[in-house]
Image (cartoon, rainbow, N blue to C red; front, side, top):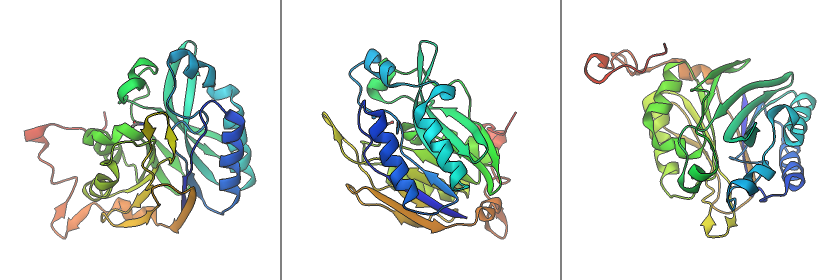
Length: 262
Ligand code: ACM
């Protein structure tokens, strides 16, 4: 399959600009899966809950999701995007997986970063993994990167690719993504944003790593870019790291516990 990392600068509180920018970037290229940054419909650095509420959308009543669904259908492709989601009076920092036939999956960020704690409700959808024609896909959002248990749990549930919409501001994540990909023997696609909102500067360098921990794609720190390559998700089914070491079966869950699916 062909995968694209879409790196750009979503505009705070300008939903139409974000629809236009994401549509143009997706249209510029042919892929089977596009991964977009966190909060791509809204921008990131809200001045409190009420501003974020005004920028949020319901999943089933969102112009942004409708535009991406139309693109997914027209291009017969999958799209993962971060999404400022409203449900009743609650806001979630979510990620959606969309396909030609509609919404395939929803994940809500579990680990909220800094001021997000004053705005969003932590995720209540656990860590789902979704079947696609290419293989199983799980999602994490940005600061979830800090928690190895989240990557592990998705991989144990069979995720062959973890799509990771991000608005990274700390300089660490892009260094650990290849290691998480290696130890979980899966693909990781981190689509980060660029640009500055008030005092926050986002770090770009969107990254795709394979199950050997090799970096297949890495974007610039400050350029709007769509980077693409071919990957084979079947490689993520092989958990052997030597002929005699299966990275999952060799785990000593009797010593340190078990994250296997329920
Ligand atoms: C982050 O979680 N957006 C840093």
